Every structure is written in structure tokens, then in C-alpha cells.
Length: 209
Length: 285
Image 1 (cartoon, rainbow over the protein chains, first blue to last red):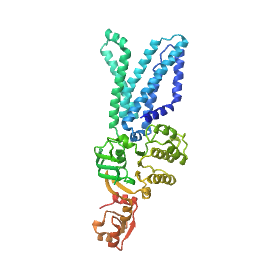
Image 2: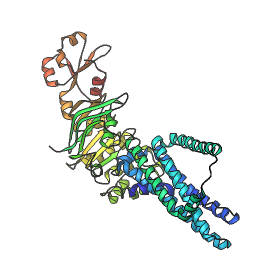
Image 3: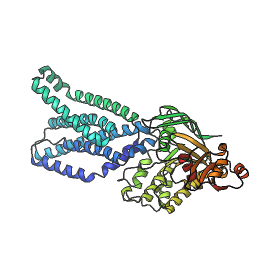
Image 4: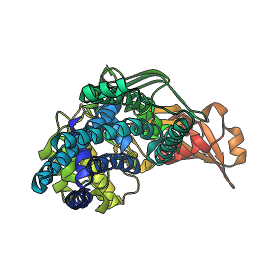
């Protein structure tokens, strides 16, 4: 399985120019404006990992991949490990850059930086958990259409629900979240990854190449 | 006899096509040529051997181990070259070595680089920038560099010029020198099989219609050529299949010696695997 992770990392390495461009934009914005761009680097990491799935499809890699000793399970496991590692690393990297720039500018709020960074990481894991089963089910081409449809569907549903029902979050719930937010985020992230992985594996094991 | 592959009551059903193999045993130490027209079921069989598709029923054993329950162990002994499926094109041979070191326990980097050197392939050239022949050579080097006992090749020589094909066939000859090594080779280029194959497995419409040693086919099978009058005199039991041409009949026979004695005035030509395929698929009975 390490070999399959290496394969994805080597493919990601070929995207180093895009990473450098986004990093430059990120640093520039962090210096110039009072705005948080934490999501930018992990989002780019997620997109690059998704592009490896697209590229795998394009090159008919899957048939060859499942003929290797690790089989279908290994392919799925390696994709999740690679993506989570890339997102995690880029989130930590974002945080480090923010700390350095914050120190330099003298406006560092470490708690806020840490909180936003965790939030961005959680958002990426949420996106990955939703997107990966769709991509493994429908492939890169159809998956892209399915991704957009589901995204719009969820957005539409949230808008509709929020218009029809005036939702107010109970104060107790906000207090509980404030107190236990790191634990809630970590536990829900692990749960999302686990459910997504199980669903993707089931889809991929059934899939024929 | 030791078998590399044992297949029993294998079934794979699709909407418009079914593969059904009751019994197929491939001995160790031989080259088996899989022949058949497009869509006959050759690639389906190969994919089943690699667990790339799920069977509906039956049993596949490779080196006496059930494939489904010993996938990792079994695949350590298999080298694969597939038609149109390999590493992404942005990678180069050096990357492949880096990856494969952690895929196969017995991956031999020295051997891999030796093959690359023999094939005059630069290890830093990406696959996208390689010709079809060069790319195929990298695929074959990759398939051979973890010391597999079984090579599964799906159209490994298709689309290559005769020089590259010969180089590749030489490699297969070297591989098969070890008596424990087995090759399953699916190809449309039947002339390659006439050079290298020990056994021929002919698949048609999802079923094995012929499974014999190549020499047995070449020695015993033949094409009897005759006109309509002569055709009517032939014992129908001697006819495997026949094809009616504009001026004559071509009859596939499976006992050349017997027919030579029985039909002394008839011309009996040697058979090629291509003739055999054509007469069985297109011929009447």
C-alpha cells in the first residue's frame, strides 16, 4: 500500500508549480489583508488529490492497480491516507505561515488561528468524505456532474429549509460546542472518514474494471 | 502434474455475454496462448484471473491457492501486462521503480534497471514521451522485475513492429527457460503463438472450444481442399467444420494422418492457428 501512496505523491509532486502559485497568493493575501485564507491550501490539496483520481481514470490505471497484490482494498485505503495526509500537512503549513506572518505583523491571535485552521481542516474532510464515494462510484467524468448536482441539491435544500423554518440554535448547544469543539470536530471527522471509507470500499469492491 | 492455474465451473454473466468454463487446467512451466475473436471472452478470463472483475460462480486456483482468499500471496507470484492499462503517463521508469519497491516483496531494482538498459530506455523519460514500443517494454520490464512465476499478458505484442515483437518474444523465451515459469498470453497475432506457445486455449462465445498442445494441433489438424463433388463424398464425421469458397471447399479436419489415407486424391494443407480460428468461428458444420 505504501507503493500506491508513493504513486499518488509522485503524481502530486508533478503539480508543484500550482502549489507554489497558490502558496504565493496565500502569503500575499495574508500580508496585505486582514482576511483568513486558511481554507485555500487544504482546498488546493483536496483538489489535487481529486485530480489524481481523474488522472487514474484517464490512464485506465484502475485495472492495472487492482491486479497488484494490494488489490481493490489497497487502492481505496491508499487514496484516503494520501488525501488526509496532504490536507493535514497543508493545514499545518497554513497555520505555521499564519503564525510567522502574525508575529511579523504583530497581530497574531494564536487561539483564533488555531480554531480557524481546525475549521478549514474539518470542512475539507467533510468535502472529501462526500466526494470520494461519488467519484469511486461514477468515475471522474460522471462523478464531476454528480458532485455538482449533489452540491447544488444540498445548497438548495439548506436554503429552502432555512426560509421555511426559522431555525434558531439553542444557547445550550452553542455553550456545549464552545466547550468541547475540538473533541466534537475530531470525533465527527473520524466518523465521517470511517463512514466514507466503508462506503467507498464497498463501491470499489463491487466495481468491475 | 503441477498446475499454475486451475479453473472449475467458472461463470461470469453480463447482460449480453456469458463466460462459462467448466474445467481448465494450465500446467506449470508452459506457455499458453489464448486465442479467440474480439469479445470472445479472453480479456474477461484474464480479468477474472486477476480478480479485477467478480465471478458469479466457480473456483480459480493459482499455484494451488484459492485466488479469492489468498489474493495478496498469489499476486506476489504474478506479473501482468495489460492491454491499455498501466501507470499514469506523467510518471517515468525511475518513479515506477520507487513505487514497485513497496508493492512487491521481491521487487528487484537491479533487474529492472538491467531491463531498461537492455531496452535502451532512459529512466527519467516520462511514459507520455515514449513510443508505444518503448512503453510496452517498460510494462514488460515492470512485470518481470519481481521474479514472478506466472506472467499474464493481454495483447502484450499488439500494435508493435516485428523487431520490437521479436525482442519481446525473446524475453518471454528467456523467462520460460525456468521450468517453474508459466505464461498466459492472449493475442490476436496468432503467428507469435506458433513460435512460442506450448498450449492453445481457444475461446469462442465465452466457452473453451479447443484446448490442446500446439504441436498436436499443427500435427493433427489440417485443411482439406476439394470441390463440391468431392465434398459430398467425405464422411461427415471427419469434418470438424468447413467453409464454402467460390470455387472450392475448405474443410477443417482433426486427424490428418487418417484423412491422408482415406482421401488419397485430396489436397491437405498444413494449418495455421489463424486458419483454425477462422474455420471454427466462421465455418459451418
